[in-house]
Length: 125
Image 1 (cartoon, rainbow, N blue to C red):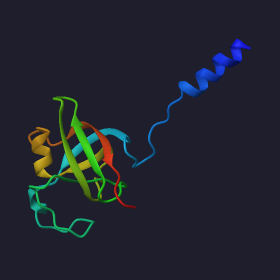
Image 2 (tube, helix red, strand yellow):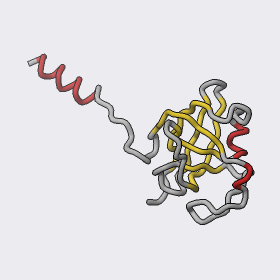
Image 3 (cartoon, rainbow, N blue to C red):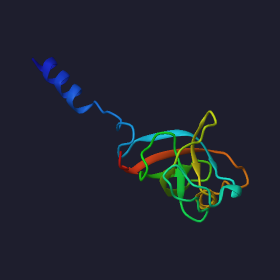
């Protein structure tokens, strides 16, 4: 009988599931890049114009309006951004950041850095 109690305890208290895609707490690891200055004023996928001073980002599938924290593990810096566009479309890259967000992560010189991205607030589907 004690074996069954231990098994029940283990299965109910030791299982954890990662948050579903796009839900609060969902994380991705990969590389980040940032928008070229040439794109200033161009329309993004959400219909707004790109403004380098805003902390925005592009993701392939997260809904517009999703708020994420992007962390550069090389220096521990992080930035909160709003998903407003689609991309990046280069293999291995998970997010494209505005110039302002890239500065906050201290990645402007390198151009591409490894990052961890975590959903803080879900966007509208």
